[in-house]
View 1 (tube, rainbow, N blue to C red):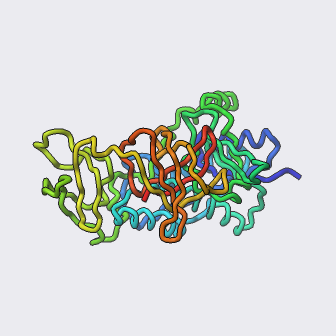
View 2 (tube, one colour; view 1 turned 45 degrees about the vertical axis):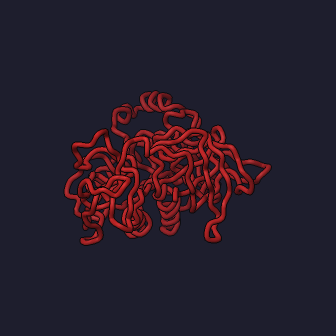
View 3 (cartoon, rainbow, N blue to C red; view 1 turned 135 degrees about the vertical axis):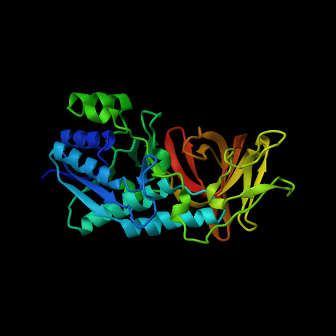
Length: 363
């Protein structure tokens, strides 16, 4: 009997070509797509591509169409309540705490690799592995007896940053058909197999289909406050902390400054945004909590490694030292060179060469 695979299907080129690759390898593939859109959220029209918004109907149809062309089953898994509790509520709470959330990382851990395959099995679908179109590779280390994640062959498409909070069992039961291929190879494969229309389909997706995050918050949960300089001098008024993040320069409503000012700190306790010159954004260390170890079991002594402090950041060399804060495991990272805009609430992801060690949340 064929090994059965449930594939997270978006209908884009990556998930569709993942299905074809798996089928060519002899797997029996079923497409599953999660439905998360809640029409009670006041997003009336899509102003950009995003995972959450009224444009979901088009995405579901694209997934259905792709599965029909592939000749495989397709199932929609409705997860609106789970998405609200595990992603939207986290997103709002983090912003109200004066930090900047990373919803995509927790959507992968809690939804795509969590509730989506779990609910599919509860619905009666039978499968041995869950596959996605992520550009990452996995292997098994005999010495540590751990499943490991490595960066993709195509480093320009590598998505290992998003998977830093997966558990060992989630990795063990997952397949990543694209990890050893380059994006251009995937496009050539699509053309050769009659899916050329997918090579021109827009792929990039943000979290929301709007730039107005306020639609996710209940009335009265945020309010205007002061914009101040590092000495506490009031320079202006902000619209609510949810609209701001560390390193932001635009849309501050400031003028007449001696040089460009950036957000250097968010003070939730006083409902203040602190701004200053760019050099005040440079720091050489951070504390990380809420740790998850992926390719190694943990850390009991300092380790030289590299760390990404956001998706678009080039992993920078650092010394990682284990700590204990309030009885829980934590890390101090000291970078070889100061880094720009280290942002509380964002994920810091740790690497040695192409090996994903683990990750934590910048405290």
